[in-house]
Amino acid sequence: MTEKKSLGVKPDASQHVEFLEVLRLTPFPAKGAVAMLRDSIQTYLKNSQAQPGSEFPTDPEVAAATQLSRSTVWRALSQLQREGWLIREPGRGSFVGPRASLGAGSSETLRRDVTRMAFLIANINNLSHDWFTPEVLRGVESCAEDYGVRCELLGQREHDIDTILRRLSRSKPDVLVVLAFGSKPGLVARDTEAMGIPLIRAGRPHAWPDAPHVDMDNQQGARIAVERLQQAGHRRIGLLMTEQGVPWVVQRIRGYAEAMSSEVGPSNMDLIHWMWVPHQSPRDIAADALRDQIDGIKEYLERVRPSAVICSSSPVSRALSLAADELGLDIPNDLSVVTFDQNPLVEAWFGRPITTVRLPLFDMGQRLTELATRAARGEKLPAASTFAFDLVEGDSVSQLPE
Image (cartoon, rainbow, N blue to C red; front, side):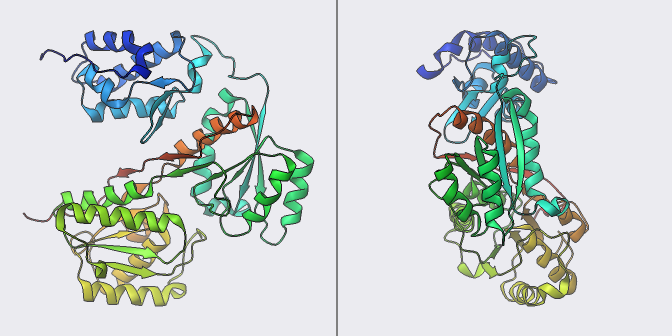
């Protein structure tokens, strides 16, 4: 075994130096290292005096201490994050999570009082067709008991904003979380401040930009999509982008351009195909509703001849699946595909598992829960909490010969 290097621990993580030294002296097996590291950190957090929200060693620091690979450390720490032992924020670092304050063997929740979270949701009467909201709520549910959180769901009610405001004024939740999208949520947000109800927005809402928000790193998501295709030998990589004037569109374009420029020179704007598709997350999008979009994609594929394309959203994926079918294209042999959105219908549309840039919705739900309890205590919240995407491999990317 190679001698382990000394640690370069930053001062903010000094309270964990002894634990890192323990990790340095621990022999990790070739198999089972993820579980062993996860259990070691969990035991430490149960028995230490580390306070929730305090800084924890970063992935590189843990990797340096253990001499394990970055992917092994990432998997172990990701499990701990999902279970509430850690909070990890791209660009900021890792922090002790809420479960650490429960202590060893304790079954008590973090707070004996209750934080009441109200969620404004776009499709509350049709959640079976909405894959976005349930995944965020699943993240909330995973740690709600630890935080002492109780939830109320509010429908967006596009044409009945007054009803929502009356409900808010009667129930007076501690925090309102806006998951809905479109222009109407801004009308609700405008009046919650007057009611003294703190507001947090998540993911898609853009109507209240001054509110603290939990979002995803869309530039990073686009970069990993391009990089996956580049690793498979693709250079002529197209992007099918929806025409919407919202920040995530701009961010994904930037990430795509950055990744394309890094290896193959400035990206050709002809490789980007702009299109308009419905974005209401329906159960299925009929071909006749997308005829113009399908024809546009067919013309684009025949003219531009990309070897691979990235779909910016699941409605775009639906249009591509129909266009590819009409052209008789075999995926991935004729065209490699990477999609955004873990919409379960995408696999059925293409008839195979698709390599997917997965939105960090579960992690966002956990972060919303933590922020809600802090807001209820009157704490100042960070302006933004941003989470990274991950890539889920499917069977839609072919390896090109060198």
